[in-house]
Image (cartoon, rainbow, N blue to C red; front, top):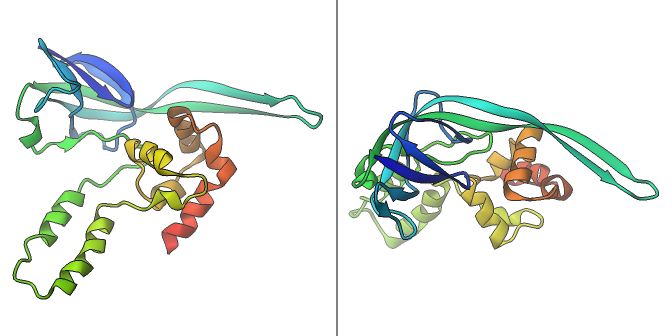
Amino acid sequence: MFAVLKTGGKQYKVTSGDVLRVEKLAANAGDKIQFNEILMVGGTVGTPLVDGAGVQAEVIDQIKGEKTVNFVKRRRKHGSQRKKGHRQQLTLVRISDILEKGADKSGVMAAVSGAGVVATPAAKPAAKKAAPKKDAAPKAEKAADKPKAKKAAGGDDLKQLSGVGPALEKKLHDAGVTTFAQIAAWTEEDVAAMDEKLSFKGRIEREGWIAQAAELAKG
C-alpha cells in the first residue's frame, strides 16, 4: 500500500520501509512520529485530506542538505554586496506503517516542522490536567486559570514584533514557531532557513525580530 503525505510544503509518495529526507521536524533521533496530512491512501483520495489516515515513521537522524550560496548585489552609488552560504536543515525518517483509519487515536507524536527548535509535545496533557477541577471554588479562580492554559500551550502574541500582522503570524505558526523564546534563539542559519522557507526576503534582520523577541520573552 502507498500513501501521499504532505510536510514542509512538499508532497511525498511513500510505502512502508521507504527512507525520506524531509524539512526539519521537531523530534530527536529514535523518536516515533506520525504524519497526519495525508492526501491519498491506496485508492482513497482526500478532500483535501483523508479523514483518520496517517503515516507513521521513525526518526533516523537530523542532517543538513547540500551547501547553497546566496549572492545579493545592490547597484547604487554606494552599492553593497553580500555572499552567504546555507545548508538546509533536514530530518531523515524511515516509514514504518501506513494507517487508513484510526490515526487520530494512535497516540503517536505528530510530525511538526521546526527550524532549529525541538518542540516539547506535552502541551495537551497540561491542559487536560487543569480541566477536571469541577469542584473548585469560585468562577474567579477558573477565570484566572485561562491565561495559564494559554501559556502552557506555548503561544505568544507574535504580532507584537515589528512588521508582523495576522498573515505573517499564521505563517510562523504553520512553521512551528509560536513563542518569542524560539525566535530569540535563532542562529544565522535558522534565519536563512526561515527567509528561504517563508519568503521573508530579509525581513527578520531588517526589522530586528531576534532582539525584539529577546526583550519580549523577558517580560
